[in-house]
Image (cartoon, rainbow, N blue to C red; front, side, top):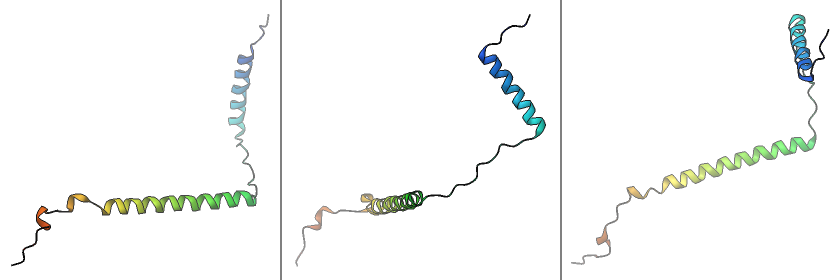
Length: 86
């Protein structure tokens, strides 16, 4: 007497069969043909590139300004205000 299979066991059997037959036949998954990009997609990508470039420039400017003002190198003398006029 044959037992009725459950959904998941039937699905598992189908997947195993598909894997076995797929490997025997040596079939590769079909690649999708490249679709043409719309003008809106092209404009979006161009703007995204400009945005990233401006962000990079802003970070570089910020780091150069931040790195240029190193207070540890400055020596302040408290006696600078007093001037000797002899």
